[in-house]
Length: 140
Image 1 (cartoon, helix red, strand yellow):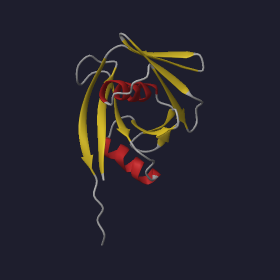
Image 2 (image 1 turned 180 degrees about the vertical axis):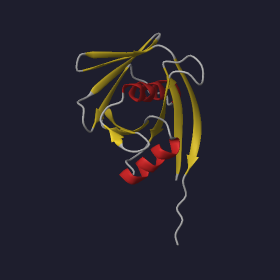
Image 3 (image 1 turned 90 degrees about the horizontal axis):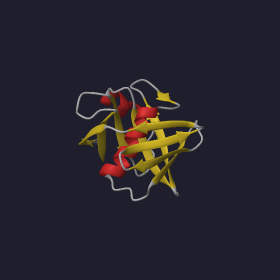
Image 4 (image 1 turned 180 degrees about the horizontal axis):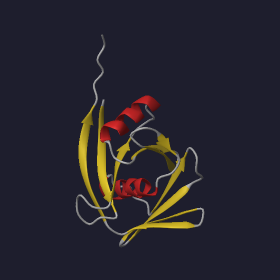
């Protein structure tokens, strides 16, 4: 199995600044143990995983040691990847998460802005890079 993983430095205009997060688009959910292993391998504060679901996207966040209920910079990083690298066409993204009601993020001319339960999140600067992650199954 090959996975594409993006490392995004949120709130940064160049590499090695800001808040780094990994973003991993998936076609369907992998086992939780595997998601946790990928996050541990990335060794960043959070790794965001998302899958398409109807008109929105399911989104989950993992630290190197556990799943977390919300991560603002990794959510913004996910929206950045979708708009800037994966060609998401709409002006608005809706994320459905396990523990939080819908998070809405919109593309602005100078960055991203989101609203969740009345709290506005914004990101005007970002730096990102793409890498491929190959996974192989070995049987004994």
